Image (tube, rainbow, N blue to C red; front, side, top):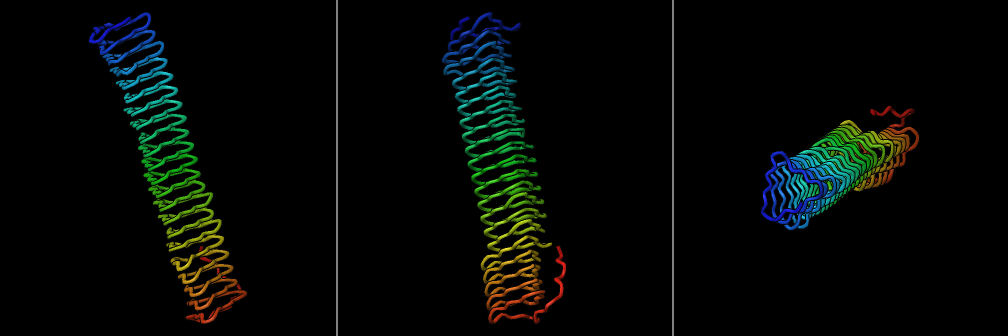
Length: 384
């Protein structure tokens, strides 16, 4: 069947074509339509109902609009495709805008923008511009050049050049975002790599995280290794099986359990228990204390709260409160409150209010004590 520009086909009982249908220019079908294959050239096809094509849909330099459902084997539209209901096919290729309620396909490629008012189910989704999914997205691979916003779902691999946002719970294997990422729900996955900022309004469970700027988690955080170039904040509890490396400030409102920690600026937590070493360049502050295998405090650093470790090293001009360790080493001009150690070595010009040791005490020149050091038979039990 061939139809020219300007024709309106009234089909209250539906239009069924035994073979293919070819439309040139602007054509409207007032009803449901069914055919073997469909071709549109240099115009606009409007189907005021559903469209079922057993084979392929090809629309060259055209716009296709279907009020309800569109089903085909393959759909290729150079400009715009609008579907009011469900779009279902194997291969989908759109040059400009794709808008539908539900999209179910195997492979999907859109050069411009995608808007889904409900869900998308696909194996592979490629979008050159932006993607908006009000419902859930289920896909093996998502690639978006600009921004992507989804309502939740499950995606194996996410690669977004600009902004990625999720308004519901999300499961994934890996996420790579060049700009910023925002999650409003619980997040669970293996790897996250974001160039800028990550905000999570929920719980966050990811094995490997690499963020260039800031990560802010409103709930609990559990995972493996974390590397953040700027600021790291967790409003709940933090549990890591691997290391935490932060270039700026790390703040944990609750308790932290982890391995090694390296923070260039300040580290703050209600309580922290670590299996490995912590190194802090600025301010180390805890409410209920810090316990680690080794603690290293940088030059002119400040420590508030009790710290417990096998070994504690403090560079020059550091300020500490209560210290419990097997071995304590202070560089010059370090100040501390109470120090309990098996062995202690203090540099020049240090000041310690009280010091209790078991085996050995080495004191530099002009080091002062508010009370004379006391040698004990057994080191007191640390408070944590």
